[in-house]
Image 1 (cartoon, rainbow, N blue to C red):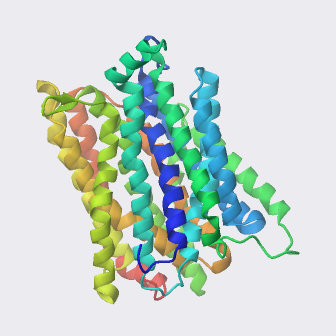
Image 2 (image 1 turned 90 degrees about the vertical axis):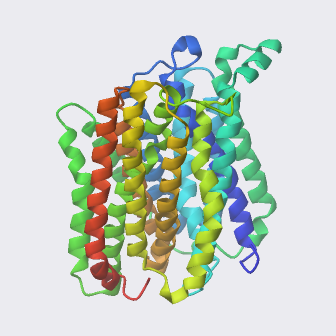
Length: 482
């Protein structure tokens, strides 16, 4: 991190451990819900596990709106993150308890803490740099690499503890029930978050100048806080209602609302309004991206567990280890992307064009899975199919996710950075929800599965073409911001 602010190190390692805890738990979540009670799981159907997975991951991002608002108007980003890491740790340790009620309570705590943390970590990274600092996007890419260091290690550790036959034998030898090995994995996620808390407190002086609370004497908007809480509650009720038979049509609002926002604000005259229109356009593109990409923890996790050969060079491994492939590629490729953006300088593609590249790679990843799905009719397929999928998705992710974070911090008015980042995370929320809905329909039938991957690849391709056509307009909306 030479030539970058020292505070980036603190945020890098704190986020690394937070992502260790999150992805360590996520690698197990769907598999644990689908596992039979005799195997220590909850015995949920694919449909129910998809709904739970989608609603939980959606809640993580929706609660970012609350987290951003509280930080902006009450406690500041630095203190909000401190509270968040404590709550997240408690959530993971609650998941380590062996009951269905503790399972849902743990998910609620992790979602609440993650919502408080997400927008404020990114906000503080942005606060380390001036708006026109050429190191800014490279700094976000480095920060994003830290996320993936944690995400790489997490499934290896928690997957070993939850699924490995060797660890189950160790538990038996120590007098523990090996069927309960899932909960050792969840506990390991809690340990990781506790380490993150220690790092954040011990090196907090490096970020003492960012994430500050409002000035003393500044009125606190308690009334607006109540409105935010009511809005989040109403949104969650709306989403939950849309899962019921006969009400699925309500999901069309996921696209209609941001498109309407882009049109309304796009024809305003003020710079801030037009930039907000650009935010909404990028929002839709990101939502489409995440509804495919975030099936890694659901659809692809099931494909890897049931239909893929979980061995290489004669050595078997837990299916949850596939979740480490994407972060491995991020770590390998992020420095190249970071160098490339700095090297290109003003000649680099604009943010909306980078989004187009991201969608193209994403569409190719699911197109790759079409022949893989067909081959499952002959038995378990090679793990290289999933490796190829994650390589393509990572190429797309690095064109979109860190670029989007950086763009949001530049497009947002200074007093609303946390809130705009929260809106940005809402795209992730809706994408995760739809990803869970798709996973709930999973079938192992080769023909059905090939069509399943194929039509999703086609949707992404169509969105990429549409965004490409809109790039000139979006660049004008951004008002000189690349």
